[in-house]
Length: 75
Image (cartoon, rainbow, N blue to C red; front, side):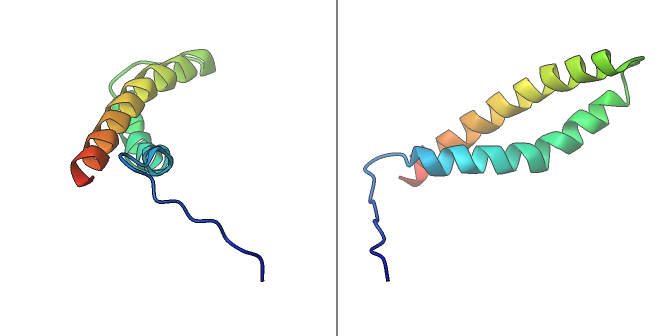
């Protein structure tokens, strides 16, 4: 059986933060973007994509900041 390396990082585990940000952004962000798109008139695929990117970026940033703050608090 191969030897498995383990780490015990000091401070915030940024790998965990990145993974949780990714998962949380998809689980929470997709419904938010879909719900907000109901209130905006979008006529073409380009407008849909631009809207999703703009709103998704804000959701991602807020999620990343929240997950990082939680990881820092949990530390």
